[in-house]
Every structure is written in structure tokens, then in C-alpha cells.
Length: 213
Image 1: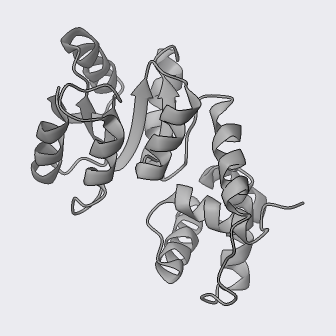
Image 2: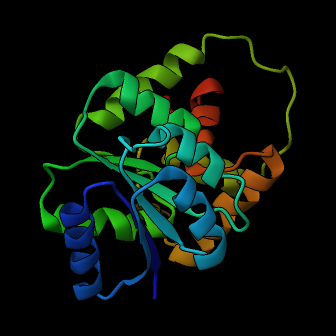
């Protein structure tokens, strides 16, 4: 069962999200309304996924995401925010968020996003994924190291499909592999490249031209 923590300073919204998650079969291990409380709770509750609002009374959601990255084991962070502003999205992703969903999403879209985030996918509200990839392409103009760790042919193939935005399940179907095997290839690539999230992996792939057709 996927363990989820909900962080939002509006009690009614927070309780509603927690209720939807519980009814869908997720284990809600904590619900909190402040950033510092969220960081402390994550260390004790050990959630797999943190559903995080950006507007909190004591610190920004991006700062919370960055601090959660230091929790052991680090949870995956799905931002659930009323804002679709470019600066908010990019700040959250750069801080370590795995995905970004606006609060206007349907219940079904939200629950699917939580599942995919738990699976390791980078999930974004339609339109925002292109924004993030566009920013990474801009950053890719910066000089990259001439040499890097060696990936296997299969790891490179998986990485190329990750960069194109395919989910693990879609990659597994295309390469005729199991979902677990795809996850293992991604984890091996992360370890070799000393990266910490699928989002960072996408940036690496774009910087090295692996998203090209």
C-alpha cells in the first residue's frame, strides 16, 4: 500500500484530499498544515509520496520540497497548487518536486497522479510538462562535462524514452520489458549519474541530446 502525507494549510481541503486518498486505497500516514511540521512528520511517518501545497504559512512549498529531499528515505513530492504560474512550477521542480498538478484537476486525475508519482513518473498538469522541458532545453545550452559515467545500451535506450515523456509502463510496453525491469534501469542510471530524481534524469537526457528523434 502506498503511504501518502498531505500538506496543506486549509483544513477542509486537506481533509478532503486525505479522504479521497483513503477511499482510493492509499494509506494516509499524516496530514499537516505547516512546512516545518511536514519535514518533521516525514521523518517519522516515512511516506512514499507527499502531496504538497505551495502556499504554507511558515515557508514556501519549494523550500519544503528541498528539505524533504534530505529526509531518509526521501519521499516523492507531488505539488498540488492553485497556481499554474511558470515561476512557481519551475521553482518547485528545481527544488526536487517529482510532479505538479493544479487544484482544478479532477479527482480521477489527482488519484492517477499520486499513483504515477509513487511509480516514479514525473506527472504534470497538461501544458506544464512542456514548460519544464522547455526550461531544461534552455539550461542545456550551458556547457556540459566532456566525459561522464558509462551507461549500458539498454539504460541509454530507457533514458531516451524517459526524456520523451513516456511513463514507465509505456516504456515497458515499447521495449517488451517488465515494469520492474524499467524501474531498475532508471535506478541504475540515477546511481551512475549521481542524480536523485526522474526530473533530474530528464534534464540530463536533454542536455546530452537523448530527447532528439
